[in-house]
Image 1 (cartoon, rainbow, N blue to C red):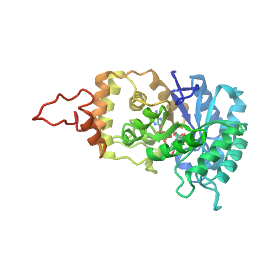
Image 2: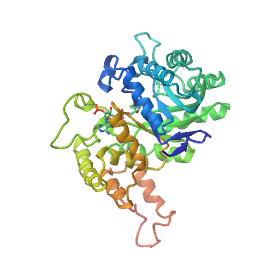
Image 3: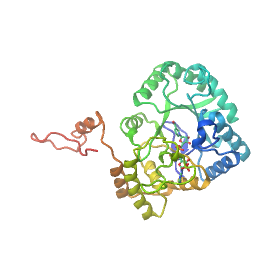
Image 4: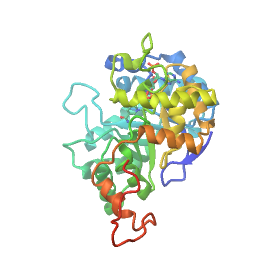
Length: 355
Ligand SMILES: NC(=O)c1ccc[n+]([C@@H]2O[C@H](COP(=O)([O-])OP(=O)(O)OC[C@H]3O[C@@H](n4cnc5c(N)ncnc54)[C@H](OP(=O)(O)O)[C@@H]3O)[C@@H](O)[C@H]2O)c1
């Protein structure tokens, strides 16, 4: 297992982060998984035994049950709290009440207390906002987060599912006031979903933040069990729940290429999809999901898989999408500053690739 700094901090996290969205199964979360205590213990023990020191949960996963199962599992297994980096989140709806959702100071304070109780902990290491709250001023959110850091109940803060301009605005507000800034951003990133490469990846690299990709298998779609001619049987999540949304025709083209590469390495298609994410710039720790220890081990082993340059290029090519504006114009204009264009009065600077 490799360990990377969590953004611009002195904390090392494993490049695999254990996701816990399969724990619990309350309400509509059942579609993600229904693992109960014994199964959770097996998953957590297997992850930790294989070098994982980073675990991601959220208040909203199974409406608190994921946090509760995780906290209990750490106790039952006798794991040392200080050796694990525990991340949770706030923003999602936790009940019918008008204020049981959002990122106001009130919600941040209350939800953190509730999360700590369920986790049986006195602090979380990374407290993340789970998305944008369109009615709470960012100043209020950042001040609320500063206060929970100062209280000693949170070590670092991160964000998830924000646009790049929102992250920059939030961190700008924090910096202006001497408050704590986001160190990481958690986003959907898979070989079938590369949108964040346009704005978020360059921002993260510029700001020395960490990227924590979620759903690197697009919820299982990229595991190899879904092909043009075959759909899995049983309760596989994507059979009933289209999340994250995937352009299936494009994804099948990608899966075709991954199948050939997987055969060459004698590994699963899932491992190819995960190794591709791990090879991408800016990725600090990839958050994996698993319903059992076989899936978990398959996924963890992606850290030992080295794709050749040629294979990475093949995968990049089949999964490339057309750059939106202004990215294609930025690329085109940059070519005469980055040495990829030799001046000719008859030849304008042009993008080196159209993808
Ligand atoms: N911040 C956010 O908004 C956000 C959103 C989503 C997720 N997350 C985080 O990211 C974590 C991972 O997300 P995810 O569960 O969607 O990840 P994922 O890796 O894309 O999908 C996991 C699912 O794929 C299937 N699978 C996993 N490994 C497999 C393998 N080796 N072979 C065959 N099938 C396999 C399993 O479902 P089936 O067996 O049912 O097919 C499993 O539950 C979550 O637990 C959560 O911590 C965050």
